Image (tube, rainbow, N blue to C red; front, top):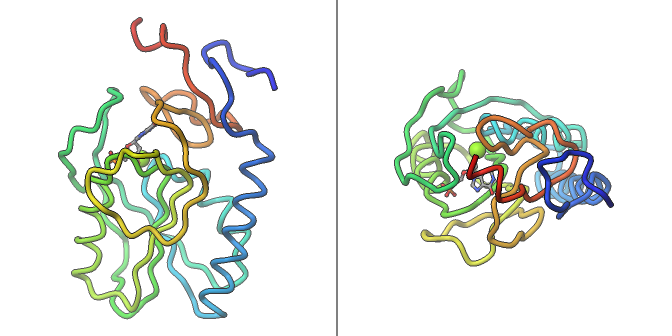
Length: 182
Ligand code: IMP
Ligand code: MG
């Protein structure tokens, strides 16, 4: 398939591949929670498109909340410094919490987030990430649901950005190198 955007070098996951995998994840999650309400905690802003689609594939009662943490700014390397920019609107004590992430890279963001959320005493705490970068995790993260393993390249689309752009692409693609150097 030809990329529909001039800055995209190649597509690594098509709209259709993403849709069918998200449906599988939704079915698996629905089975695991077996009718129990689950609070989806989406990590802003990259996970917004994923959580919108995933929530509609889950048949167990779903609640939604959002957290924003600082990670990359406009660069493509993890800073390792994590800060809460927006906290949850409600408490999570005694609730089933499922953190929804766009991509697991170094794992530093999730490690911080999970430690922080665990201290609030949820009934259960799991992670679903759409993407996981092969061989990149600097800290071990117990991620129960992984959509796709992707190669160690900077990817954009379906919520993921470079300098806040490309989030609206319906597929996942690799940027042309000249876009970084401009
Ligand atoms: P980590 O802390 O290194 O695991 O970084 C996780 C966060 O970095 C993700 O939630 C993304 O916001 C961002 N990120 C990491 N890799 C990529 C990528 O290839 N494209 C876009 N954003 C990325
Ligand atoms: Mg993110």
